[in-house]
Image 1 (tube, one colour):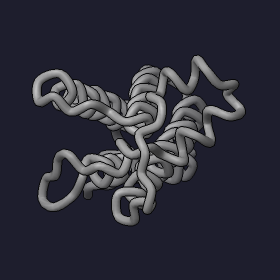
Image 2 (cartoon, rainbow, N blue to C red):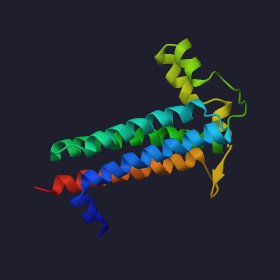
Image 3 (cartoon, rainbow, N blue to C red):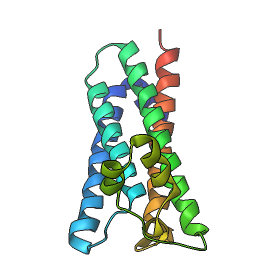
Length: 168
């Protein structure tokens, strides 16, 4: 019964995904500006991934052709997979912090100072800030929740692709 919603209204599902991403971004901004938590470089990369997922889901939601819906859903899976990878890496760093944790440059400092070829590995290496757990809900950190949200979005995209591909 639940999957029939994907068949009957795939555009509405994509609009809900986009809206959920906007809500998650708003919550992240709330944590930053009201609660006072500063995002680490990996958090910022996850935010960018979430923005891209929201934009792709929103644009795909207004697509009229089945082919565009499938293509947009595929892109949604790829982008949310990237976000899940970054969140999983940050979760790993939080669970198994390096013995020597030093606060490196911030995200924008890395991008401005180093060529992209050097900055990207530095971001994924993480800094001392990336290992710190400042906030938890139900025992999970922000990175853990981010991972779960990205995986859920990827699953929605996969279900949409399979359901739309079966329709003739």
